Image 1 (cartoon, rainbow, N blue to C red):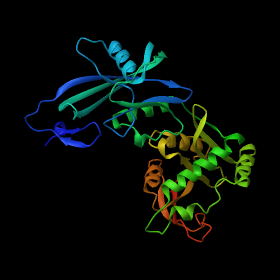
Image 2 (tube, rainbow, N blue to C red):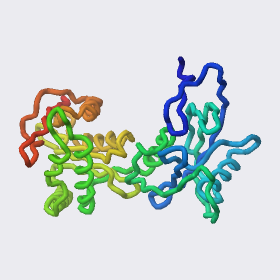
Image 3 (cartoon, rainbow, N blue to C red):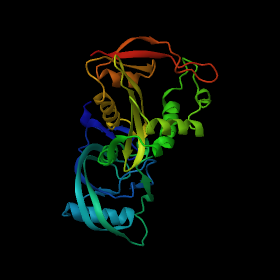
Image 4 (cartoon, one colour):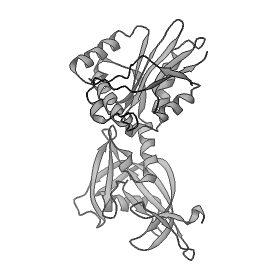
Length: 324
């Protein structure tokens, strides 16, 4: 069995194509509407995930005409102006509702101008909805559309020095990241243990605000998408040793290159002639691999008990070092 025999149905369940079935080639056109940091998505009756509005180009139809038709059918949008071409994706689709196999080539366009038409949606569309890019969960999005949404987000990312008004967002991000990353059965760390920690009290917010206003030798950077804080990084410049403090990003924004941008901002402020260290929870394998890409190597356990929780449980940490 080759990759060409592996397909997914409309609910993204894997399907093996029978040897006697010959897939058809299909071009699908999708429209991307982004307004006020929100993106329009639709959900069909045959799938639980959300996707960009659009569908198959009909015979004799231009891409633009196909886009206009699909946007009207699925989103009640009359397209007035088509903008930037965002790219294409390829997927093997089994349309189980009509028992057809397709080599699907998806093409994506920004919709710059449109007006809403009062009509019923296409039969297969259950609902359409605007999602905020700052909290969209890509795990709920059709897989081949995730890359396009990531691209939209990347187009709006900026890394800036943290300001006092960012403090509440930092507290929220840190709390969400800890709850997503650190529960671990082997080390008996549960979400309930983590929630005992003070992440977002007024005192904690004030402490961050004061740090941002008077950073000294420390660096504080916020990652923002259309002005919304989605991640942050910290560092400490020393005369004999540099230290990376923390990098936290909302889970739905991980895998988009934001961590790399945040890390580079911190490292750029360090003296490259002296070594740099950091500590990381020993079972956070994703973070360890991330740091290794920047030249950090594990040197041993970290015994400062920075990861001690209020109930006495400890997040076991290791130290990593990048030599000068």
